[in-house]
Length: 351
Ligand SMILES: Cc1cc2nc3c(=O)[nH]c(=O)nc-3n(C[C@H](O)[C@H](O)[C@H](O)COP(=O)(O)OP(=O)(O)OC[C@H]3O[C@@H](n4cnc5c(N)ncnc54)[C@H](O)[C@@H]3O)c2cc1C
Image (cartoon, rainbow, N blue to C red; front, side):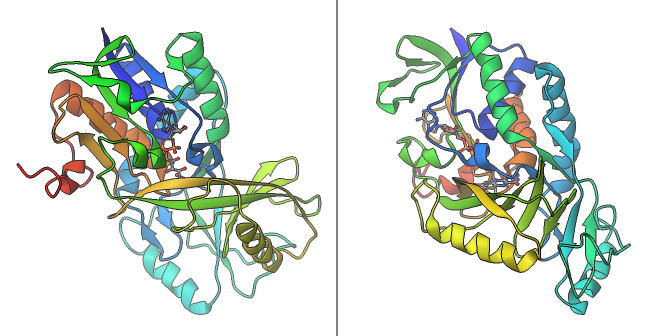
């Protein structure tokens, strides 16, 4: 009998699989390629919400866990996935600059907001005001992480590339059975695919479609990420990711013309140099109603679990909450209440 079945290998499934490998647990992953959120993500880790200059939820603690976690994966897979990259926020008014200084005075934010503002960042990104740098930022190359981690699991025979068929799941008192595979526990990490999961579809999952365009520009020569009305993130070889969009109505997983026009217009306002759009990608962020992860045990079936609801911050959230979930299952350490999915269960499963 296996210890775990994991459904889905995005950022959530990868973090959980790593936690299980660390504990020498026996597991198998099912992955069908139906969701793309982790694959197309910008991969930025940044503890500050750049709209309001506030600290993102639990970002300080998440950063301390996430970066060493990804470095260990780098060492294990012998490939580079963590890239330090500076992020600069473009200011649109003197008032915004003042707000930055005010925020930088706050104890939790002072280590992240650099008060030495920069006037010129790049000749092709003119601005009437300055730019503020966020410290301790970077990018996780989620594309490389996912591809390499899939290969790793394939080599050790721990992944099946197929759709998990919910109707074939048999739930017993102390185990589950799926097409001849027995396991003690199953953890669902399907991202927005959770809406098709009959056991957890009662959770208030709110998809938010995000799109990027990739541009090519020989003139730009930008080495840092810049946040204006959009992010522009250097990829190397004169390529840059520009985005992302936010749309909580569109459920079509394909890139849209509307997003391409929106992003092209924004980047034209940001840059004075020429560029060419060479690619576009889309994914649906799995967000929860209260913007916190939805993690924990099914209210009725004690060997079914869910690890979802990372919204737009999966890079920093997944290493921490995966550790919380496995410690809860294996060591009975209570989950932090703010991420426990039981906050949504009472209405559907009154005790
Ligand atoms: C455009 C965009 C930009 C983003 N930028 C950032 C960023 O810069 N920084 C950041 O931290 N976050 C970012 N995010 C958010 C981040 O991508 C998400 O928080 C994260 O990817 C969610 O991971 P997940 O594993 O929960 O879901 P997903 O990535 O959706 O993974 C779920 C996996 O489950 C699989 N699956 C689903 N159903 C089944 C089934 N029945 N059987 C088998 N497999 C199944 C899917 O194929 C998929 O691989 C961005 C998202 C988007 C869309």
